[in-house]
Length: 322
Image (tube, rainbow, N blue to C red; front, side):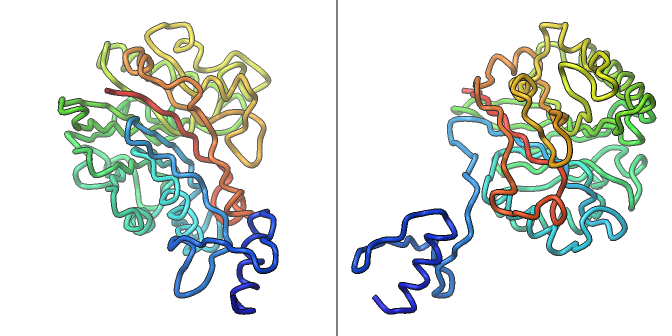
């Protein structure tokens, strides 16, 4: 072993918190650890994709692509978001606070097994009518085994309650064990702020969404994912009743992220509440894998994530659709 190789291995061990091998010892480095002859010392996030489950992630990527808001280094933010998504590689990823269409395209381009659908895409019915160039947008990144059957903006009559961001509904077609399946994914971004106005509008938006789901998708596989901007036990506004109480009281629905609330797991790098959630209809919730809800620890690989990437953390849930 050369002195240069030994130094590189020692650096790798130190960076990863591993005990260095004894002098003269043997260490095996996989091809994945080598790039242009150098040993890579950065940590990696666990891959979240499993072949036997549907792995779903949501993430508020804080003004992605905006030159006026959010992280100031746009290229670095895009690279960091792409890095997290590529390493975790879930089947479906709901993104909110995407501003730039080009930034969204650039991130998706780093995921060769996935495709992307931003709400302003020409194939999204009415999307461009409700979202302008500089607004925060919602989008879905999906594995190529899914086919988009249809996509549209919904609950437009309640757009004010959604802070001008009506949800994106995407109907996905796929096969599971040779059988055709359809899954409806709704990417939503509820009104922010822990004040009376924010609380009132979240409450109104939640009520509107429940009425719509009750009427449109009774008994179907539907998953609502995104930034709900409030918690499930008590609201972030003066510990009032949660805006999502109607869903919690109805056995036809379940927040599959409820364990995160019960464990007081924060989904942001700023506040202590669980405000990013996944809501499933009962037929889909019955396929939820208990214990699978988790928050992806982005700071493990991006120590300055709050300033360079996002103040939110990705949230993951799993489902067995076989």
